[in-house]
Length: 565
View: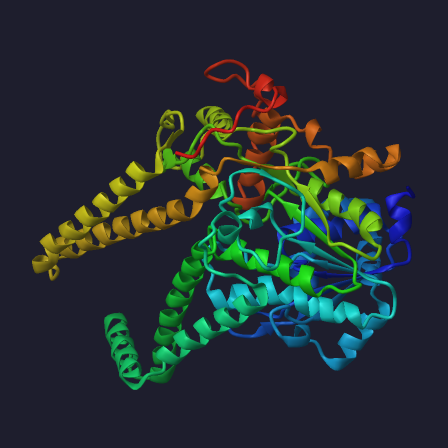
């Protein structure tokens, strides 16, 4: 097999979702280690400032994107030639994957079709309970729009779609690297009396659900109710009557969004998926499998994508991923327990390993046929249990917590995983109790004490409600006993040139979980997400677990998958 960099020499690559975690790391890797690539077209949406003016895509490229610490290594290598090199290679294209013809002008659409040989789709609505309309347009129909672009390309083109391992939904056990059946849902795969499913008909059904919610929001009596609610909000905030129409429309939009979020979750679980994100991502794969024709399709299914393992710097991350809010809340002493099964596998893949897999798989998959599916996961070869992960986090934060109050830091207890049912019932009981307590100072709301008390109770109840919602969304992941096979990815790795193995490492057996979780990932969260200055005196910890060394956990044989709690 030829060298990976040789394949990309002289080619033009079109990347969607370039401002996200995977897209950024992909662009940086290409510019740093594959400088032979001729052109990178990045699909970027204009974004508004707080003062209301839209920033152009060029401003976003030179500002938010290139100013990131991710490019510090490349910036040091290039010196004064950094910006000229970037502007020679990278072109920002204004558009939107969620709009017809990608929201592109005719000139740009034609330019891309004449120049591009590789299309990489990293864009997605990643919120689990996202509004159904946004998730459908971007996650499900977005890949079809890229497929339409690919059909008109002048050069032989391959479409790379970054999906997720969790398109398998609530299916337990072993999940193979195989294309999804566009005529079956997760529920219909295991039940004889499940609702009939076809992905094209499902798209039409979801559009009807969305249109129905929108129509209900415009009924005359409901519009009157929205105006009344907007008036109450203005009165509470001490605002005058200006902007009345805008306030009414804002209330209507919030009403529609809440119902679209709920409708997405209901429809997803009806078909066997856990949430709107995995449901619509699965639909995107199914639509590509049905309609791709003679266009080569490469589907990358990562598990939980987290901070970089090695390149360009260890621990780099933008934003908080799935488990990170819990990790940070525990470090601050705010959360010490969460619903989940400590015996299930927490399948994590560092983002640089995902990008390296993508770059290595494209040359092999760039041929008629497919879709080619590669699951980029660690659970089948180098698993880490949920309980082991939380123990490593506990060890690190018991030595160096994120507590911010004055005085000596409080010793954190070991993090615990609890059965989901009792945990959620206890939260609901506390929410009901706080709701009742709010009524007590209602008669004294005119006093400073009464107002402070009601404000404190309202704030506490809102925080518990957010925890309840977050826990309900994550329970399907913290109790799911499954393994994602990665035989295709392993075969790809074993067939690489030795130099490519050094330059594009994605061997999951090389991950030392104790070092990655304790030293790399948590340090990255503090430095790149929380923006905390690193401590020069922080020693490299030697991992010791309550029941022995964690180093033995990372290299031991795969433990038996326990049933969900």
